[in-house]
Image (tube, rainbow, N blue to C red; front, side, top):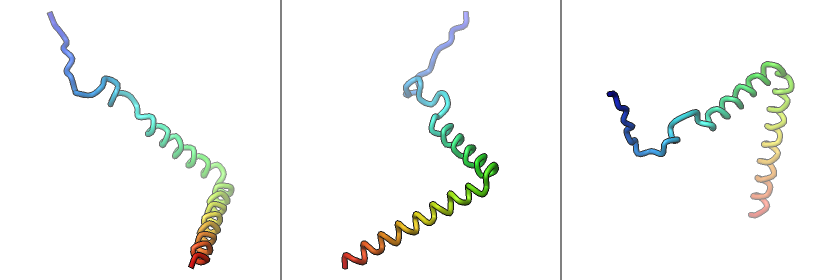
Length: 70
């Protein structure tokens, strides 16, 4: 008669088994961004340009605030 004996790994039974949800979501987001850039490059470039302008404006405002403290 053949018996199967489970070995204890010291981990809970669900840990390490299955797919990591964070990895799946990350790859889905990356795939969506690549798809969007391929399908609409002009609007993708406009989004990046707008984000750059917003970051530049925020940096200028922060520099003005710090400069006014002195």
